[in-house]
Amino acid sequence: MEIQIVGSRFGGKSTLFKALTGQSGAKAVAKVPDKRLNRLAEIYSSKKITPAQIILNDSPPPRANQNDELFIEKQIVPALKGKDTILYCLRSFTSQLATDPPDPTEELQLLETYLVMSDLHTTEKRLEKLNDRRIKHSQQERNEVNIIGEKIMPILESSKPLRNQLDDESIKIALRIGLVSQLPAVAAVNEDDHFHNLIDQKLCDQWGIKAFPLNAELQSEISELPPEEQENFCEQFGLKQRAIDKLILALYDELCLITFLTGGEKEARAWPLAKGSTALQAAGKIHSDIQRGFIKAKVIGFKQLDQAGSIAEAKHQNLFRMEGKNYPISEGDVIEFMFNI
Image (cartoon, one colour):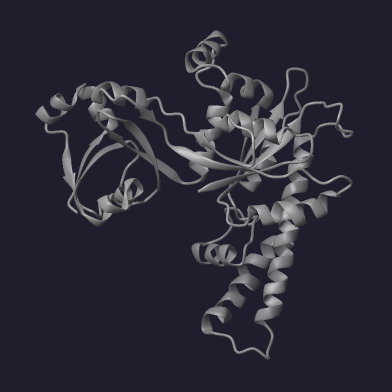
């Protein structure tokens, strides 16, 4: 599961990337905040804590004198291929390097419009190929013509992104032919202490985009502090959590992920897992050997374990249950896998 950061020049993309990952570069992971891990480590006397992670990709800036349309067509759209979610970084602060005043709503409209135009061009080319009478097409391809013509094209021709507009069959086709406006999206509205140009929330709702205001430079500086000082900073300003943590959790949700937990003397760990996954699939996230030799999963909800206070007490209350390979994993399940290889 990978996220692509997208934004215009001088919007603070690289600063946002560093705030999210604590690193500079083109690709890195962001740790998903989860307060349950500290409690889990306490219960299991774990020596190490490992949070769930998501992968982020920073996109290259536009080349000198490159217009917006060419930049999106040649650099952004190819970068979005194979990704799972878009993270827009929208400028809402004044900059000596930028000639235009900040307008996050206009920037979002521009980016989304060009993605729609790119998808429209892709579907037109696909239909042209499928309608070529010189080629004998399969029944699947004939069905594809109908779906593109009746369900996908009308949305794009109305200048709207495909996001949240398609049924399951149409989504499969959109993914197969590489349409990018159907990708889930989150917008980080990058502002400073001197300028606040709020984004049009109604437009975001219409396009299915969650928007989060934050100061990427400040968040990047906070992320460099030791964990204790980060907590003190949040307490000092009356914050329940860092703005960047809210953004990471929103991205995690857009990726349709849940978290299951494992504990032991060596490590307390959070594992990301696609919603609707089974115990067998969860076992495979840890190791293929565990999946191959799966016998049973010993499961307890985190809240139950937390209330019990210890493994011994949870066992005394018969809170653990044995589940088979088809058990659907729930958010916060604490699991011990039984396997034989």
